[in-house]
Image (cartoon, rainbow, N blue to C red; front, side, top):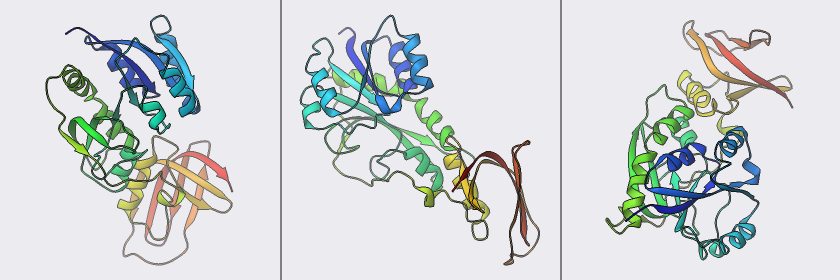
Length: 282
């Protein structure tokens, strides 16, 4: 069998690049959720402007109407798409999704961030069929991904996405009728979108390990933060950490050096230096 004709939905441009480079796929469309237009998407649109039909999509209704007009692809591949596809959409097009987390316990929007925040040492990247429930369906292929204690969420995502060509090979085999799916996941642990409380550093109370996980989990965004006065101080790297003796209660002093992008934090029992990302007034 020859190439599979396929479209791409989402803003995960590394997956799009892998799909475009794969010899067994003929990519026809690049649909981007309007709310996720970003520099990576603009770069991809420029790169592929002469070979793909590109459109932005606002919601399920618009997507369903567009899918109803498309007859020259077999399916769409989705990666990093905030639109939760409904029955109307899925009745018009077969869709597969790449998810960088284990569907048994790490469904949801930010699986790589939760993997780091919770200190997990292994995750998965999964190719699965899309249904009306978030991150469930037939698992076409899953690949284990090791996680080190120093990996940021960005590192975890990069290690996982290194396996996308393997997932694309498996999808092609599945679509051409060679193997069955690995299994069907009908439910599993869903992890919500992170909120401020998940990555706020509590300076008097958090251990070094807790601070490290919060910073690494959010460093691909603005970092973790702590409140100081009427500001949220966002930090994306621990530059130094030193304990000065037995843990003691006491005041915490903070010195922000904006010109050098450093934040110095001292208490009776430890000293820390962070890389400053930004300061938000509250």
